[in-house]
Length: 431
Image 1 (cartoon, rainbow, N blue to C red):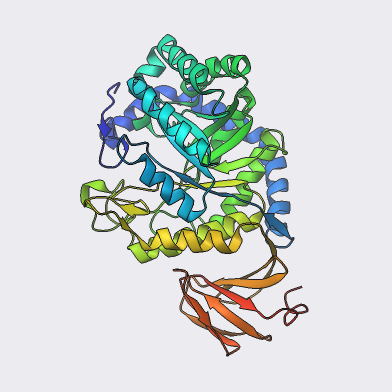
Image 2: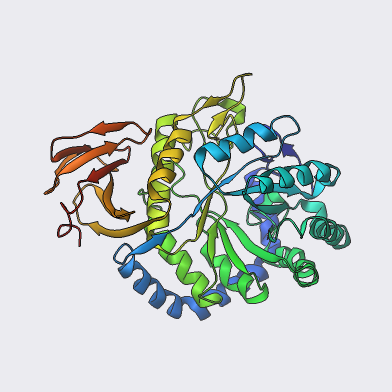
């Protein structure tokens, strides 16, 4: 149970044991689960009250969308320049890379990577990964933190402490073990004047926040908020779609911490069909490349327009099984999701979400940017034709193609379209 084996194809650890064995091991931590239950009982009333307010107001008020678009990547000895060029093409100004505790010998590479990206005006957040031996040997983990903070604190101020600790394959068996990893980070963060990000809980497990946030003074709250693992962001999991999850997550953060703290999604993606050992999941969770492209754009549209999340990081730029780029051949192939991300950023960066209009089967979000109004439209169900009572100037497709449009009818499907209107032709419609 204390083993830790890395899967280099999917950039994650292998499971430590079969599910039945993990279940037996969890029985040893029943007192921990009891405390988590107690912590939630104390917050459930205020939390639900806060959630109802946030859920009622979501997509109802204007939201300034400055630049929530962020991207994870893995530093490379041979391809850092190419990676940086992709960031510049996408117009992404915020990146994240991981430093595993077991790769302390690669710090010169991470240092070189930081210098390159900073020289291009790209800010970097560093996520620090743990393994089982870090929990069992606190001195080892503390030394790792000291080395990393002291070396990079003048170049990078924001560090996510630990990763996906609510999955045993990442070496942590309960929240108390995670707090052991946080304890030395708190003291060192003050010493080196860095910001701590956490708790890096993965998936829809918000019940872990009360106990952890009570004990850990994070400067920025983070979540690895994956949605329905077998489909679209609008699909429900136990009745919760992405928008409801975002409101509930924000509510959990607000009642357990300072409601003024920023909330970041530091990881999400969809694994791809046909990628075999490179996929981080097997079977149903895998989607087609076109579905991945659609879901990425829709996740960002829903998340950034909510106003409840300040940064959203896609994991990651290059990965055969789930990335924006497939690098299995010498010539890299940019997938549809790469161009969907580029198009999305070009439209939404520095815009203002204005309003969402009701529609039985489609999502129609209006935005303003530089004095011009446009709508982002898509459906999670069957295609639907919508008539805009205004003059359409042109349409930008998800892939970035510009189409001159002379009709007020638009066919809305799974791929978001950006509908641009002639100035002053739609003022009274979306307000």
